[in-house]
Image 1: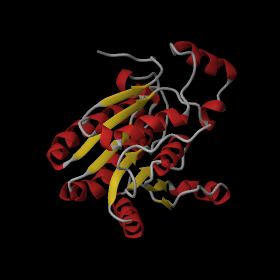
Image 2: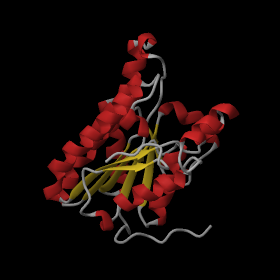
Image 3: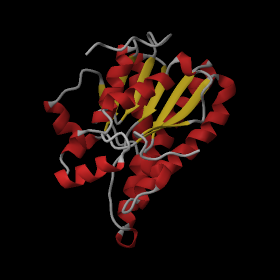
Image 4: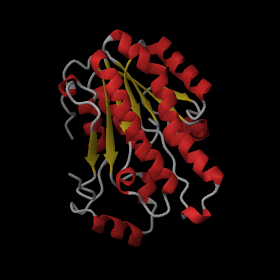
Length: 250
C-alpha cells in the first residue's frame, strides 16, 4: 500500500493523540506522522504491561486522563519534549455496558470520566495556548451511538453526545483565534475488540451497514488528518460521520 501524500503545512507541528495506543488511535498517530508532524500518544496506565511487549513506533505517556492533575502533567511533559502543541485528537474511551435499570453509579462515572471528563481536561491543557499562538486543531472522536443512542449504552452514548456539545462550544470560542474544533463520529471499526466478537454478532452488525463492511482504522485516521490540516481551515464545530451509511441525518 502506498503511503498517503502529506497534507499541506503539517510539517513540524506537534500533535497529541489521547487513546493513541488503541487501534484507531495508533492509526491516527501514524497518519499524522506521515503528514510530517511530531506525534505522541497518551495511553492509560492500565496498558503498561501490554505496551512493554508491543512498543509503539511513536512516543507514549501513560496517564489517567479522568484526573485533571495527571492530565496537566502529561501534557506539560510532552510539550517540554516536543514543543508547543498545535494539534489535539481526543480518542480515549472505554465502555461499561449494561441496561439502564442495572447500570451502577460506578459504571456511569467511569465512562463519563474516561470518555468526557478526559476531553475537558485535555482541551484545558492546550486550548488557551493555541488561541494565544493563533493556530490550533482539535478533533474529538465520538461515535455513531452518540448520535442515535444504543441499547445498553446510556453512559457511553451520553458521553459521546456530550463530547460534540463541547466541540461546538469550543469552536465558537476558538474561531476568531485560528483554532478549529470538530468531531469525527465513527461507526463500527475493524479492531481487535470487534474481531473478538462472536461470528453471528459480527454478521448482524455488518448486515446493518449499507456498505456491508466495517471501517478500517486508517479510514478514521484519514478523516481526522484532513480536519487537522490547513485545508480544513474553514471547518469548525462540525460533526463528520464515518459510518458507512449506518446513520444518516439532514
